Amino acid sequence: MLTSYRLFSRESGFSATELADLLRSADDPSGWVSSLLSEANRRRGEHRSGDELQSLILPRMMHALGSAVLQVAGADDTPLADVFPGLQHVLAPDESAWFETLGLLPGEDVTAGSWAGRARSVAFDYLKSAIVFSGARRLPGPAARLRSDEIIWGRAPARLDLCGGWTDTPPYALEFGGCVLNAAVDLNGQPPIQAFARVIEQPVIHIASIDRGTRIEISRLDQLLDYREVASEFSLAKAALAMSSLAPESIADPRGTTLRQVLDMFGGGVELTTLAAIPKGSGLGTSSIMGAVVLAVLDRVQGRSPLPKALFHRVLQLEQALTTGGGWQDQVGGVMDGVKLVTSPPGIVPNTVVEFVPGNVLEPAENGGQTLLYYTGITRLAKNILSRVVGRYLDRDPLAMSTLAELRSLAPQAASAMSRRDFDEFGRFVDAAWQLNKRLDPDSSNQAIEAILARLRPNIIGAKLLGAGGGGFLLLVCKSPEAASQVRTDLEENPPNRRARFFQFNISREGLRVTAC
Image 1 (tube, rainbow, N blue to C red):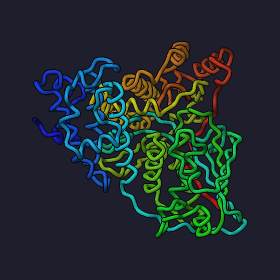
Image 2: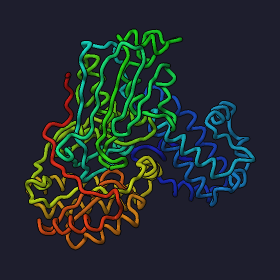
Image 3: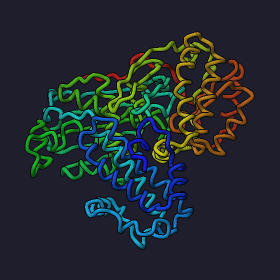
Image 4: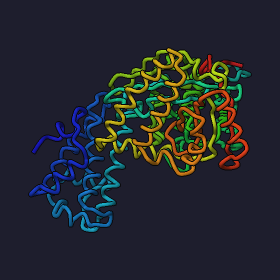
């Protein structure tokens, strides 16, 4: 048998479908699966450091195996024992013990669908851990550096992803490098993503959201550390607080630590308030940028001023810890001002390089208003789209792989068009990126979105849903100022729903700003 290293290494294009074909034709398919599971057991140790790209082999093995098993079974409810007879009896005792803890121990009552779903879930768990522990270092213990009457105020623009999105997303970006063209923009004249923090005398943590109109008080450590739970309120803020030295890991002896003890070391309680003046599910990178703003504000509270690259990586780790996934382009897009071509070479810790690009063709004030930003009023959950796209990559789906390569090559071409101030070519590249996004995940669009675009097509050069797709904001590149006026009139007089509306935007010249008040 070929070694799993050769089958699932970064360079290998061996797909889950090819693995399924191999299992169908094998004289002993159970032996093949057992061999792969044994190798997965041996690969566990590579996750202890998280410093090598080798740690990405295990997620790929588990996801591809789960997908292949389901393809061979043909139906979710097919008993696993019917497809791979005797599998539970050929595993070594230590392997069986490990797989039992993962919920992957084969048994007579286990269906192919449930086992495959669990295997793919385990793959994402190991991908998350590889990133969360990459480049990890312990921050200094918690210690506030504010005067009693000071407030730290952070604010950042939103992000418009123009071309190359998805190539910044792990593990593709870590194994092949990414290339994205995006822009930092203020909405309706203001940076829309903001956070405020101050130290209070009471030994508790208050977290409030102005846009959601909600507030919580945290008085126990378990209330802070429950951010991994799906139903946890303010999970992003809690995770950011934990990562900012307010978790026991930041203390020399964490045994039996209480929140009050942590806050005593910190020098008081914390009041954190956030404001996201953007509709939920916008596709403008709000959650990642908010993560960057909150982390930067909490760093400033403690007298730290980390370099942007360190902040970008911490946000990547933050989102993986929250199980929402995501790449690096959102935080780079919102933290850094202007229009940027952002690249990263392969590596477990992304080393992003930013090249600034002239924004004249994108800036409405400079192009006669030919670029429009329209909120469709349709919301979507990026996590579901992310898991599908990343899953196709882990399975080395040939169409997904070729599409990612095309997206990666598109970004520098679009940047070149912007540098030449070639408006029409820029619009065509934006449209090409949207078509590639739909090829990568057909669910990134839907009937309602396509109906809007069909109405507007005579007046636009190109358009794309921003972010992961499925809803949120549309960027429209119109054929002329007159065409833009016609588009605006059409959508204002006949909106697709009551929430849909235009947003004024301008390219941010400041990016993330953190100041003391």
